[in-house]
Image (cartoon, rainbow, N blue to C red; front, side):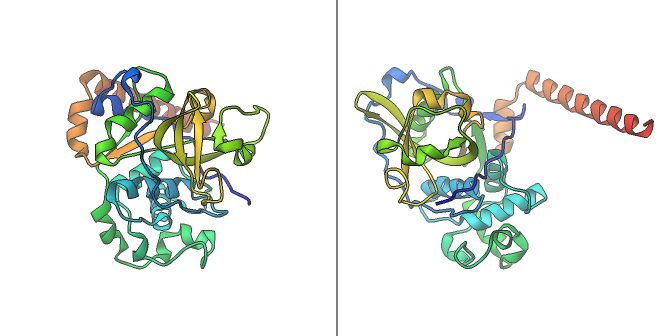
Length: 294
């Protein structure tokens, strides 16, 4: 089975919201060893598309909204907001922005899938029926937060999963996926060959658990139930803390973004933001002047 990568890298912006500032943090020592006991929702299958980010976004919001949501319209909308549907893959912020600005439609509300349409048809928002954007609003997210905290990446993610469990929230993430992991024993991912070819792949973390005395994060992928442990894989601390997880992790909560701006952005952050904008403007003007005098 061929799975094409679809996750691109995007650096966290200086105006990004922090999960720690929103939800707080607790010591990993008090986290339940057995995890949350959360069961996966519907295991999706992206086939050979580059839609892993939207499939993960749909699975993530399906936990919160408690209804099966559509990954195809979501990908097309995120690509539309970006400005191009032919460009390969998406980033985590692009999916998060689509979910928090436009929302997502329910699976039953549109019939275009990889079973009856090709990739470019599904990626183009113009091919979807009118009226879906209005329907998507009932499942719109509020604000998205980058997973941060005082611990390592592994424990910061566990921390967030525990603190938001009562809100039915999970974490969207991604890594430099290794194809050899598809056949790893017991779906446990605890080592990798740095020379092996990889591709950016998005998925969600839904829980954490202890297996034979070792802690793992439970990842729900979008390659169907035939992969891993019926669609789940178990990621070790060393893997999650490695450079493979450079894409970061995001959680969406139904908060008023304007209120979050007031609560999360202090004066220093605002000044830093304006300085960064000024630097980019100067760099752009310098570039244009350089082109004129070539």
